[in-house]
Length: 305
Image (cartoon, rainbow, N blue to C red; front, side, top):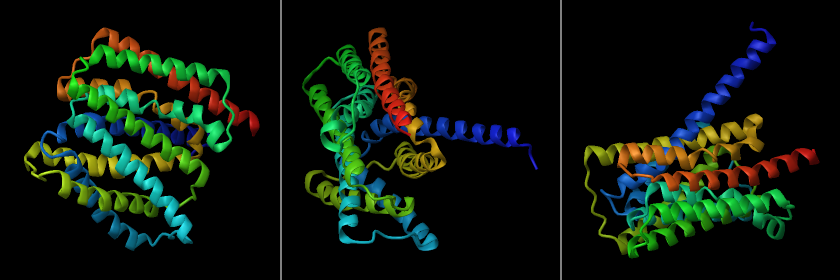
């Protein structure tokens, strides 16, 4: 048997590796999705992503036989969260990519959600917000605005992409606040199956009604779809849930500090998106704002325990 300190060190290394893989997979979802919408309309892409994910989850559900929500209210709560995340958040993010917003800009905007949650939590879920969190909100908004100004010419397309990205931010923020107030703990397989099924039920009809559903089945698109299904929808979410169950909940938000810069680097490599020096400086403000707001939240929780 390993000594206690060796065992603890091994567990710490595994946790660190899981965090790094999560950050890479989640950050990669921005440029990969931006790449994929060049081969398929955004809602069609989402319908394909959710359909493939559900097909993979159903056998897993049959094998593991996890518990289902106990009453209609629990089903409704899980469905609302699924709609806000899978339809509003991802739907508007993909539409923003199609409208011309860069992957880096979208990553910065939607990564402000911990700050907005901290700002809105007192009124909606009764959590106290301190001065550091308000300062974090201000820094985050200044930084995000700087990135947008530095990176975007604000043409008609990029402006519409900007508003769609803000809509995605609102969707994810609403999902987190709703989960805080009404969420009921579900088995990961059950929660994911409900969420992706809701996404499929809404996105597939919308794609048929609003888009021509033409898909270019190239090798690049197949790779991108596989990444979004396996890397984003299954592995990244599983790692996130595993870290939360391992007692890392108070530290999870810190992972999102790294997502905008990592997404920007990956976007530069995969999409040749250039981030001017001013945008990198503004991104540092945004990351610092999110870090400051979330750090304050974590400390407040620790002081209460």
